[in-house]
Length: 267
Image 1 (cartoon, rainbow, N blue to C red):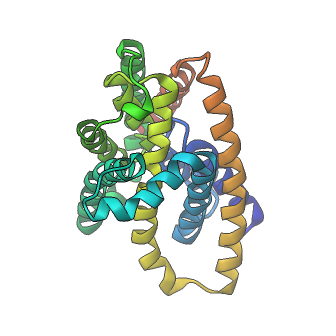
Image 2: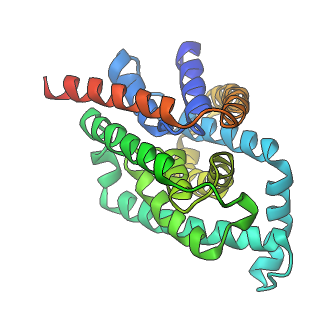
């Protein structure tokens, strides 16, 4: 596979996974708008692994607390902040796993991978992000996350399986709707991505392992590494900007891209 394809796929995934603009939508658009060969599922899994390590390292304190608290949560002992965080993440992930399995088994996931769907979701959920960001109160911190909000945000997150919606965008929208501050909304969204990326990676890996070889493994390692550095950079910039800037610039980008894609699709 050409290095340019690996580089573009890694940069797109790394930069857009945590920005509210839809990484899956951009990855689908890459071959459709450039005429390049589709990067394939092996590279998709690899770049997701790269972004997974990026968010774990960036939010290491919270991520490690949840990981060490997971065994206690699984035993029903919710007596530490880490165990409670782990329980919240488990609850938030269940809806997307169920919905994702349904889409995979019915073949609807492949049917929705087109410019028209991405154009509409870019536009619609960009407006949803704007509405929740402008109307949501800023009274809650990430450490005030509740089990009820984890479940509700998990249901919102399930919608992100529709290409172009944006997992981070829809979960940030949900958090803002429930009154979490901008930076805290982004933080919760990023932590929710950890089990979600793991779940999607396991689902895709079952198909990828059968077709993998030495060359594919080398290309996957390159793509994962590039995606990792791109994701760390994107996370750093976004979290820094959120101290002074709203989500409106991302909304504007989504609306413009959505209009362009719909004009291409219908003309």
